Image (cartoon, rainbow, N blue to C red; front, side):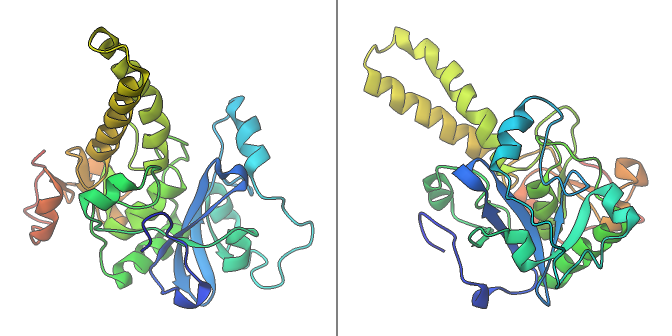
Length: 272
């Protein structure tokens, strides 16, 4: 993995990879799971809308989205996207349609803290480890048929979907941002500016203020990463729609607990 870029060639792709591609002007990146045979399973708002909020912000997002061809793709032609998948927003596309003319990048897992912080922009890597590729592909294909919650730009987006497929982790608490590094970065920037403002009482040096703002931003990203958070649960894909009421979901205090074998479904309890 490069320090500044996770860009890769198509020849190095492996089934189970979490991949992404930046859209025009680098406003956002679209994420998905490569499942082999030139296919990518990814999460959208449905009906060919990759991303959106339902607000005026969509004007900016839509302007950054790739231009869709009026000619159906001869490779995928939505062959796996029936009415149910169009409704739930999880779709299967060929790799070229997923990239939409953009470059290919691979999201990295289990990175060390120094490298994580060196990646100034979120949505490229995480401290959390990935599950085996077989489990990743199984989750993605299951969600293609059964759906992945309701789309929300800040709480349940394409990156959240891909991270769940790779780790089985979901944020348990309602009303908080999901595990998407992109969303955390969007919120973390203004947060850093607000929190660092009181430091004007300590220093009036513009460079000192800038350093403090960057420090707050990096700290917020690090604390909010899915590999550090205390509000995540390890959830079997079959139990996704059942939620915590299923009784088979194991909450985790921190990422170290993921190294411990999960309890049996009959005895698992929520510990967070």
